[in-house]
Length: 292
Length: 347
Image (tube, rainbow over all chains, first blue to last red):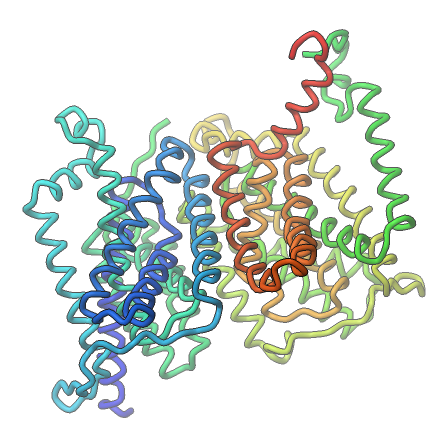
């Protein structure tokens, strides 16, 4: 076995996993606060990436202006979706809410295809091109810098949830809605905020992933990998999303490199199936107790 | 409540068609189905067959999702099992179509039971993800098990045959698909007049309470999975006979979502809704094609926008029905019926 090759592949996988962790975090924020499983997260990522394409490519802005604008646009989209399509579904069964997010995903794919066309596109490159070496191992610069930017946002998020007022409100709502309400927390605003923050994380990850692998209206399929991440980690666990994200990203890349691209999905879904059988609520998720 | 509609016996109350008006309309409907292939042109006939297949599969998914409350994202995978079974059997054994379709249904049901096994331990969305995993694995098997499934190229098959008759045209297929669809919907209707069907509904409404009432959850959940995937398997088999080719891409994930959407748009937990939803969702793309063809002379760009427009309409229908009409087309249908049966006493 070629250890250098394995190391390089693993490194690329771990970096990709870092981005998965970021998307997973976005997913978990939304789930924790509002109990909505967001199947449209891949499409929100895609939308933000296309916004970046429009700002940086079409309008020829500097990428460092376009990036925040695109991320802002993506998070705004999340907020709007919550306001007009998820809010009316409050209190409905979880099947219905999930189906609404699937519908939203389909609408977003259609809108993107209508505006930007169905052909795959390349994002203007904005990350440094100098190859990165860790020891002897080579790492593609796009992936390396993408990972660094993603990790920075991740740390900001974790600090925000730990210390800020908004973060505390979010955690309070997640742990007990009624109590949070009676303590004067504006739960509705927290719901909206959760969608905005969740979409923000997803949008940034979307631009970074699209920058490494190109962009097409099928880009949203990455949402399936993210689904695996959050189920393995536990739907309501931030730590779980981080660990599972890195692990699934690594596994996907290694399986793709050693067994071939067609094994990427089955490999991760096999882990998912094992987890569902032995730890149905994920590695770090809370086991909910049901009463009649 | 209708006037003069009091029932004297349980049999009368449980009957599928309760009034003579209903019986007449139902007979007329069956007659129209029989007459349809002789009147319709090739395109309508093709659509009729597609709707028939969709009705069977949607009814199956309705049993699982609408009546038992278990969400499945694996419907296309089960259909694929049926389709490949039929394709393989007709290539290697030359059995007539009733046998191949039955075997397709049974094999799909067996796979359905296997996939349903986690359903006692996980439920709700976790179960949906488990079925999603199953459909990923099935797709992988279809694509990679080349000696049986033909790999990415898939399998092509001979037309359906029975007693020396071959059903090559859409006209012939119509007489396989539609009677089978009618039969299978009626069978489903009857399931829900028995203990089994009522157990399904009890599980949907509250599975813990159902268990306390003495319903064996694992048994009935698996039965629901088996029944639902049997329907999917038969629908997949018909799909294979109709298009005469199956590839891994014939049964994509979007197809599973399509059937879930058909169940929702039609009305969850309502067999009539499943039929309406299947027909509606199958015909929407065709209606859009006609509209595009009509618009092309004025807007030459119209065809480019058709496929994204379809995505948007598809999504908007799901979202719109869930928010504004959660009981689906079936509820609209009932409202129309109520209006006519109460008119002019209530407006």
